Amino acid sequence: MKRFAGKVAVITGAAGGIGRATASRLAHEGATVIATDINTTDADQIEKELRTFGGRGRFATLDVTDEDGSHDLIDDIAATEGALHGLVNNAGIGDLRTIEDSTKATFDHVVGVLQTGAFLGMKAAGPTLKEHRGAVVNVSSMFGIVGTAAVSPAYHAAKGALRSMSKGTAVAWAPEGVRVNSVHPGFIDTPMLGGADDAVFAPVIPMARLGSPSEVAASIAFLLSDDASYVTGAEIACDGGYVAQ
Ligand SMILES: NC(=O)c1ccc[n+]([C@@H]2O[C@H](COP(=O)([O-])OP(=O)(O)OC[C@H]3O[C@@H](n4cnc5c(N)ncnc54)[C@H](O)[C@@H]3O)[C@@H](O)[C@H]2O)c1
Image (tube, rainbow, N blue to C red; front, side):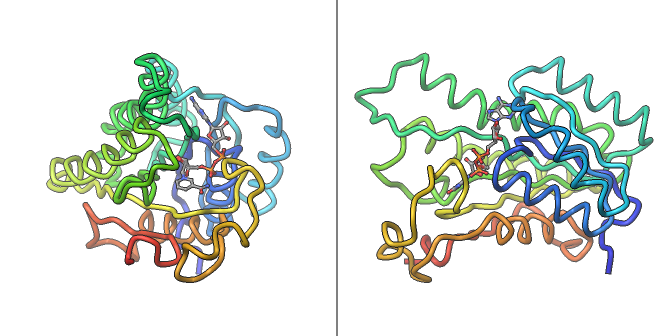
């Protein structure tokens, strides 16, 4: 069943592990996917992948911290596609600095990409999403729910903010028919994790293995789809049981 036939979705950070898997998943299910990233290295290949499923998907360069760029992208999609039904705020950077090693500049940079970037995405896409009763999925982290000394205060702050910003926006936009939810990946085998192997993480994960980008993509696709038509302000931990401990 093609859950996204006739639908148009934008994904940020779509050149990376989770974003690229999500772009493929949505395109496979019939969506026209606008895959965006600041990293343009694989742009042609990504565009080719999206079109193998028969859609009109494409790659667009976008730095999520660029407010004008976000608005221009949404305007362009409205002009070319005539609609926008889904937004996945996924772009991200890792940060392992301790609070002692963090500066205001490094803190602001991480929050700027992870948190402000998602805010700008929702702000730009909001009017079009309302017009088409669309949905937003914000990709947070299990470290938006629980703490660890292994990642930075800025990463925790931004991912926690994404969680509550999703809930607040869900309540604000519910009357206008736009659903907003968050996904909280655990340790996922992507470039962000730097090629870590199962053996390092297995002991702290109930399911004793890393997750794959396609497993997170499946949760994102569910929340974006009409299968989740009565789900808003919710969070899915896609983490092998980590936050359940
Ligand atoms: N991999 C994990 O273990 C894990 C766990 C929890 C949450 N997450 C979150 O999942 C999301 C995707 O991460 P991933 O693991 O696929 O990492 P990744 O590094 O493979 O992908 C992140 C992508 O975001 C892009 N990006 C970075 N800054 C950007 C900017 N300013 N504008 C636009 N694009 C930008 C990068 O170029 C990259 O393609 C991130 O938000 C991350 O914090 C990942």
